[in-house]
Amino acid sequence: MDLRVLVVCPDQDSARLLRQVLSEMEMAVEHTPSISRGIELLNEQPFDAVIFDYRPGRSAEEFLASLRRSSKNRTTMLMAVVDEEFNARPVFGLGANFVLYRPLSVERTRLSLRAARGLMCRERRRSPRAEVSSTATVSYPGAPDLSATLTNISNGGTLITTGNRLPNACKMYFEFALPGQPQSVRLSGEVAWQDSSGRFGIRFLDVPQASRRLIQSWLQQSGGRQPSGTQKRIPATAPKSALGHQPRGPKASGSVSDAGNRRSELRFPCKIGAEVYRLGSNIPNRCALSDVSEGGCYVEMPSPLAAQSGVEILVHTAQLKFKIRGQVLATHPGFGMGVRFMFQDSAEREEVLRLLAILASGRAVSEQQR
Image 1 (cartoon, rainbow, N blue to C red):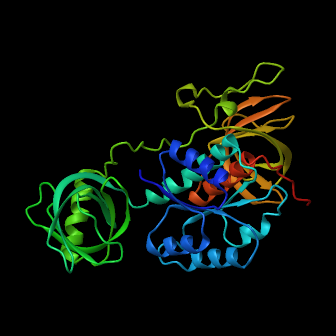
Image 2 (image 1 turned 180 degrees about the vertical axis):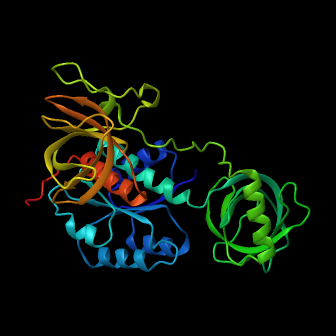
Image 3 (image 1 turned 90 degrees about the vertical axis):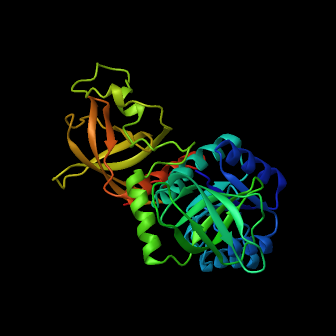
């Protein structure tokens, strides 16, 4: 998956660190130290995320306003880099999804970007792509027809490779046949992004109904296979700590065996006040979350609920508030229980990822006074 990130940052040390971590995660990086150039890039091509070195002032507000007005990037994830003592709440109000604190460190930046990357991948996969190997003819005004190779395709666009450079702001016309189909697909599109290796991401513009049916039919037949090098996402399971955490004390009772699903998942030690409810009950049980991952958490409470119980956990901090359902996987009387999250929708998973990003930043999670 070719995730692309725009980094607008005048500080060379911070920009170098961000490029290093993003490259480790196999994300393409476009860097500019200039806010005005950053605005130009927002209007020229789409990005999966924007990392903005935020310093209060008119130019910063203009950049954020341009981002949310951009036809190509108004829904793009925004990560703001702010000072350690800066109150980040106004930045969230301006549309930031994540916050990174100066001075940046490799480890904290890596943890935050891992959490953000999960959201980026899910956004990309809303339009599944399938591998394809086919030759296309590309034409646009003022140039002879070009030959290109399609390497993957979705309902909304395709990835092509060609030895010729294509213009950015230009409507182009494509004709190609998908494997096993006797009829050709004809449609128009534009360059969404390109790199130095001759790859071009094409966004479809005008797709005749007949061509759309051909693409959809072929995607269904191909089974929506993912492009090479893209790992299929494994459904979130309980974190290792929720299943295997053994605090000092008696051996856990009523634990659920789930060894086959245990996997290495990024966990964050913490101490977050929360309330837990047995599903169907409105009686709150005060507790503390001491270990959180994308898949679950460890709930510290002296009288844990029975294994297999359905629960609802309410987290209410100064930074965010959310409620999430889960299932008790392991119980440790006198200590607590391991809970696997049972996401009802992508919004719930996003709230957990926001919490992970706050924990990864090294900032304390302050409990909201009730």
